[in-house]
Amino acid sequence: MSNVVSLTEQMGAMALIDEMRFSQAELQKQLNLPKHRQLVAEQIREFYRAKGIAVEDALVEEGVRNFFANRLTYQASAPVAPLTRLLARAYITRRRWLMPMVGVLGVSLWLVLVAQPVAGFFGKAAMQGAQKRADDARELVAGHVGLREQLEKQLATLEADALVANQPTARRLFEQAVAVLEKARAVERITLPLQVTEQSRAEDSRLIDSATDSLKQDSADLKALAAELDALSAQASAIRSWFTQLQDVQDKVRKMGLSKTDAEQFQPLFAKVDQAVRDTNATAAEQGLKEVRQLLAVAATPLTLEVVSRTGEKSMVERNFDPTGGKSWYLLAEALDASGNVVPLPITSVETGERRYASVFGVRVNQATYQAAKNDKLLDGLVDDRLMGKKAANSLSFAFVKGPVKTKPDYILEW
Image 1: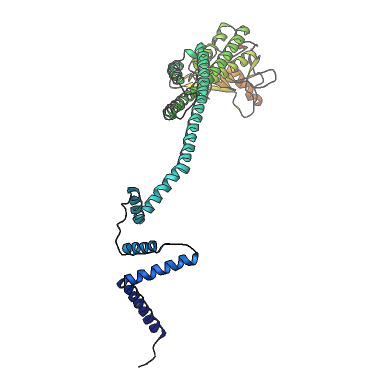
Image 2: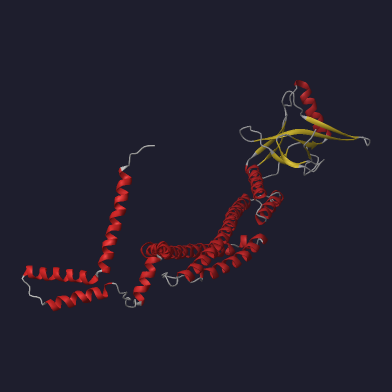
C-alpha cells in the first residue's frame, strides 16, 4: 500500500478546513457582538479622522448599534404589484408559452406581410379575369348578332325565290329557321356588366359565365342553320341554272319552227327536266337537259339516211313469225351528216318499246324494196343504191325515197 498523499486530497482537505475556520470566526463575531461593535466603531472614527471629517462619537455609536440591531432580523418584502407578478410568472413558465407565441406571431406577421398582399393580388387578378370574360362575352354577342342578321337576310332571299319556296323541304327548313332566329334574338338581350368591381365580381362572374355558355350554344345552333341555308342556297342556285337552261332550249325549239309532230318529241323531255327541277334532283335535271340538247342538235342538222353497206356487216334483216308464218323485212340504216359522219338518232323499237340513241337501226320496208337491196348486195357484197331518205335542218322527220310501209316507220334495235 502506498504512503504517498495526493495533492488533490491535500488541497480538498485544506479548502474544507478554511471554510470551517471562516465559519468559526463569523460565529465568534456574533457571540462577542459588543466587542465587535466597538472594533467597527473605532475603525469608522479612524476612517473619518484620516479624511479630516469631524463626526461625533455618539453619532458613530448610534449608527453602528442600529446596523447590528437589524442585521439578523427578517424583513418581509413589500407586496408585489399584479403586473410584476404576471411578468414574473410569464418568465418562469416561458418554456410552455414562448414557442407557441413565436408561432402565432410568425403567422400573424406572414398574414400581414405576405398573405394579405397575395390575397389582394389574386383578388385583383380575379377581378381582371372577370372583366376580360365580360369583354369576350360582348364580342361573342357582336359576332352572334352579325351571324343572325346575315342568316335573316339569306332566309328572306330564299323565301322570295318562288322556285325554292314552293319545295316541301325548303318550307320545313324555313319554319325551323324562324324558331332558331327568334331564340337567337332572345339570347342577345342578355345584359352584361360594363365594369366589374370587387364588390360585384362574384355576381358578375356568374352572369358572365351563364351568358357565355348560352351564347356559345346558340352560336352552334346558328352555325348549323347556316350550313343548312348554304346547302339550300346552293340548291337554289342550281335550280335557277337548270330553269334558265330549260327556258333557253325551249326558246331554241320554238325558233326552229318545227312541225307539231316533231315539236311533240321535245315535250316529254321538257316535262322530265321541269319535274327534276322541282324535285331538286340534280342527276335527273342534268340528264334531261343533256337529252334535250342532243335531240336539239339532231333536229338542227341536215341528215341523209342510208343503208349500211360495209363488208362483213349485215345490211338487211328478215323476221319470221312462227307458227303463223308471217314475215317482215328491215333494211339496216344509219344517218350521216354533210361530212359523212354517223349521227346517232333517238329510236324506239317497235318490238320491245325501248328508246335509245342508235347509230345503226332497222327500218321496216316492203318485201320488194328488201329484195331489191338484197339482190344488189349479192352482186358484189355491197349495196350500191343506199339512199333511203333525207332530213332537212330544223326537222326530226325523214322524207323517205323508198322503203317504209307506213307513214310513221317501224324501227328495231336488235337483230
